[in-house]
Amino acid sequence: MAIRLYLSALTLVFLFSAWMNDGVSLLEAIVIVCSLSYLILDTRENLLLVKRELKALEQLEKKLSVLLS
Image (cartoon, rainbow, N blue to C red; front, top):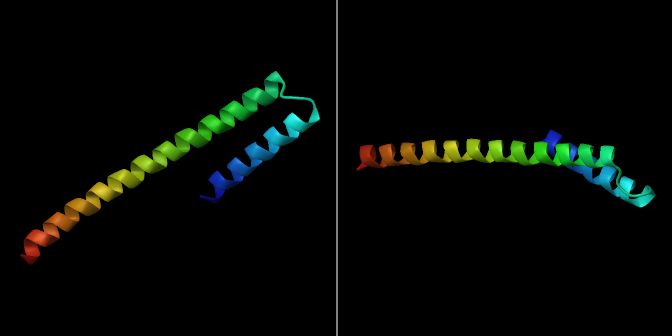
């Protein structure tokens, strides 16, 4: 989580500083796009993991409710 926040803040600071100086050049645009793509893919992977854990917990809840009934 801390790495994601760090990358997000770093990307925003880099984008803002590049924009304030003289606009965004090709190299800066590539760096920004790559970092944003990484953040999106990393967040997607994390959400899929949470979804799997939620399904496992729901299955466990169903099994426990059957056992307790």
